[in-house]
Image (cartoon, rainbow, N blue to C red; front, side, top):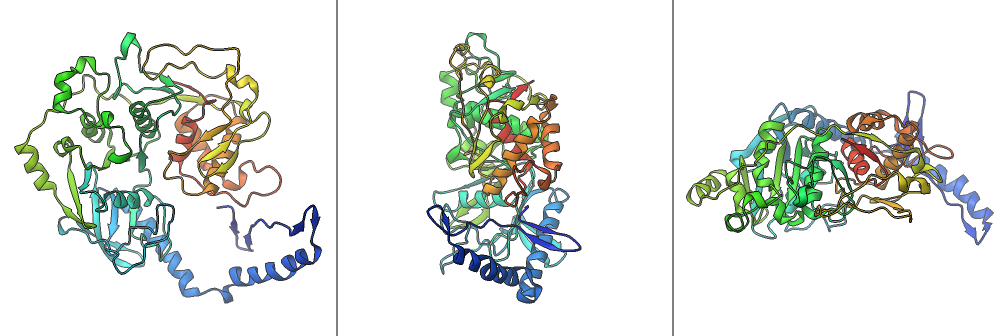
Length: 474
């Protein structure tokens, strides 16, 4: 974050203060109190060691150090996530990060078969559930904690402060949530592993659309995440397109594989792991076909997890299903090139409006630079008109792991920085350049930016992929 700068000489805190006013007149006496009384009190209470609870401060530092260490050990332990015993996973509400604190809260307890012990630098030995690399299903009845567990894993890419309840919920740093996103923009993305042979001979090796369906958006999102080296994908059946997840035996009989462009994820999820090294954690409540392809099955009942792997395998043997074999191999990861045109910031630089939205102020010239797109059904090439198409904002609503508007501000500044270098680069190279630039060196307009936070490279890439003005090529 740029809100605080620490050096050997000083601690600098940055904040914004609104001057007290009546209409267009500054209230001098109130402003004087703010600067000469209130602000010094804040400095004394927050920045002076003598005013801080040193035990709490050191506990925070130790907790963060332990979480960073634990995350660094996941790959060595062949894990993609760890949920410590005693963790409080449920939140007060769907829009709060505060832990639910009632007498009925069920603290997390790892099933014996999945228990892992880890020695941490400060806390010592901790015990919890290790989610192994490969394909993991989280199953169980409705309202029994499946999505709550996945949401905790989803946020485990970040460290948590003591008292959050999730201090020992740690996830692979590249874990990426994938969901259906109807209407999203897709550009020059090879989605053949999942969608191929569209009607009228339309190809999908460099698929573009201004209005993706749920299935094509998921196919594109997986490919885009793998392109920037995500090694764990997270899926919740509730937010996925059903026809992308599975195609049951009856539909296979009704519509032959030759006539179905979609290769469902159930036919690819093992190949993603075995050929690409990409693990999947999936909340599954109704698609039983996934029992045939899972390495581990966790069952949630009454918010308590149990290992149901052997039971799932027995059911799969007794009730076999036919999972179609894909007609083509997965193929290499994307390696597209991109230019963020300087016209994107022609009038004003991109500006974060909310956590999920960036306002854009491009020149009219950009409408002629946008790539041609095909409709999601592949029926026709989108015709150009003399009327320029304007997209006034970048929609990041689907980026569930973007957790602060300060991160969105940083992405907006990174987009402005990208317009200053118009040479064509690979997506990986562009994202790497953005994420290795110090936050303090990002364009900040007037003065010093004190309200930026570092986003993950994954979110930066996902944002660029949704930027309708980006010039992306295979």
